[in-house]
View 1 (tube, helix red, strand yellow):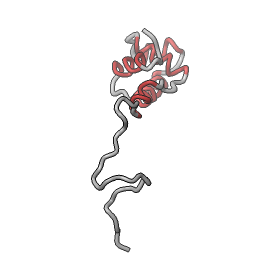
View 2 (cartoon, rainbow, N blue to C red; view 1 turned 90 degrees about the vertical axis):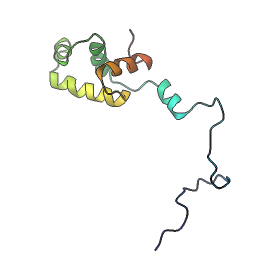
View 3 (cartoon, helix red, strand yellow; view 1 turned 30 degrees about the vertical axis):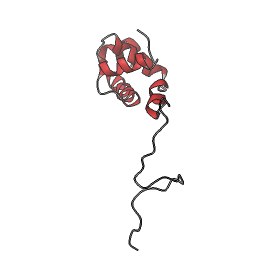
View 4 (cartoon, rainbow, N blue to C red; view 1 turned 120 degrees about the vertical axis):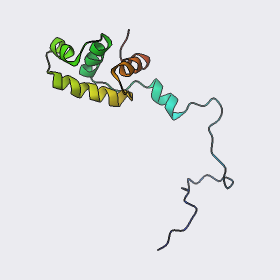
Length: 103
């Protein structure tokens, strides 16, 4: 059966052809809500993030927490994913901005 239609998803909202739906000026966006909502880091992830904030290596973080360096790496990866960070520095900055850790 051939595809019929213009490729747009019908959301049940009447609008003129080619019109773009926009939020009201000043209305919070999904991104605003995301940035205000602190990610749900586990207590251990917060401890690892605090070690990162102090500039400790994975090995030193692991020693201070009594866990292996490999386990620290698992926590660091999870922190990066939850905070949308690409580096340790960015993770710490996002953690502070989003209320996961303090200075």
